[in-house]
Length: 305
Ligand code: PSU
Ligand code: MN
Image (cartoon, rainbow, N blue to C red):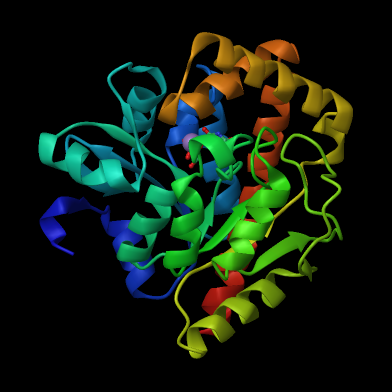
């Protein structure tokens, strides 16, 4: 990696160099996953939770073509409000950098950057997955490939509820990504607690997750680990309601012919309308909750090393 392509504030650079706990955060959820002002408030709250958990937050995005590991609050405000901030998956990164653009990074692109910057823990809301009509349209999120490729622990609340969860879990197995569920024997469904799919690996402590990651490194294996944490019960949507809202939103994209990377942002906002804002409240609660565990894992990893 060429240093002049990256902007890393000194406090983050020093924390990484000293092996202190650092948690990477993505910016697509800010620019394209939530409306203003909930997006800025959530971004700030998540960073604060990471700090309270004794880790250093680093929100990642591309600013004027430079890969930035630790967006400032001014930059987060721009990402949250400007229409000129694109959504960069991993394949979009080189183009955004070469063009000198601003771009929010998806979960997958954020994992790539975190790994390059030496950060081992990444917190997001929901990862992408295998789309419900993937057998015809090949809509499979590049997040899954990034999970298989980069040595990063990703903490999420599951794949977004409008994905084909069974297929997503199958593909993660094929891609040899360990998938842990936090204190539950069922894989969570993002907005709701249960998906009906058994957990491949139940995890009960941050230390256990850090130890498995360390073992993976010690075995010389590439790729990361995915941890799925159920949304806090108070904000969870009933399973039926979450599934019905996802179905209605999927019908709306078909009607409007929306494809490619516009699908996920459209579905998120459609589901928020459909559930009268309750999915948005769930989304905020789950990412805050994930941040708490992410910080604890980063601390456990730092102590392990
Ligand atoms: N989870 C959320 N909100 C989001 C996303 C995930 O709660 O906005 C974003 C993530 O950045 C994820 C992306 O990587 O959606 C997946 O997009 P796609 O399905 O196009 O791969
Ligand atoms: Mn997609």
